[in-house]
Each structure stands twice: as C-alpha cells, then as structure tokens.
Length: 117
Image (cartoon, rainbow, N blue to C red; front, side, top):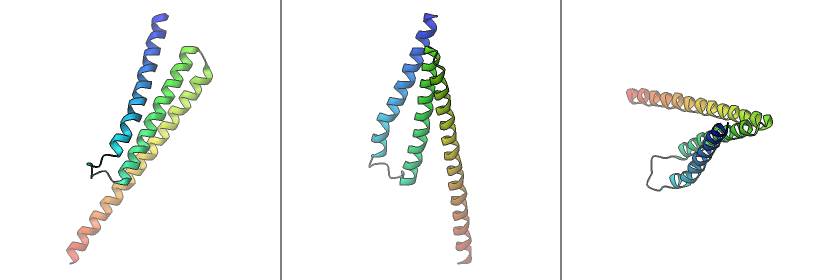
C-alpha cells in the first residue's frame, strides 16, 4: 500500500513539474525576436493549446490527489477539468481546420486570378 501511495505521489509531482516547466518556457519562446515565422495568430493558437494542456495536467493532478486521499470531490473536479481540456482541444482542432480551409480557398483564388491575367 505504501509503495502505491509513493508511486502516485511521484506521478503527481512529475505532472506538477511538467506544468511548471511549460509555464516557465512559454514566455521566453513567445518573446523570441529571432522567430519571424511566429505570427500573432500562431502565438494565440499556441497559447490556447498550452492552456488546454495545462488544464489537462491540472485535472490529472487533482484527480490523482483525490485518489490518494480518497476524496471523491477532488476526483470528480479533476475529471471535470480533463473534460474541459478535451473541449478546449476540440475547439482548437476546429480553428485549425477552418484556417486550413481558408488558406486553401485563398490559394485557389490566387491561382485563378493569375490565370485570368
């Protein structure tokens, strides 16, 4: 039993370290002046995706805490945060798909305009 609790605490600590490392690395990456390919839209999308990942990790940590302590309230809250993260990821996937379609339509319009010239 103690080994199981230690394993879960280690997992919880690992997830916390991952979330912290994501949050520490993000500002440095966003402010890099030598990255001309990062447009404001790309930065916003990356920010939204990172928010979803952070929410997912937060949910996993809270759920694990609830399992370790036997608190069903934390377990349910953690699972709810994971579902919220899934919804955030789905919204980002829709945005990405919409951007791809718009980009393809723009390219097709440009090709047609060049043929007309």
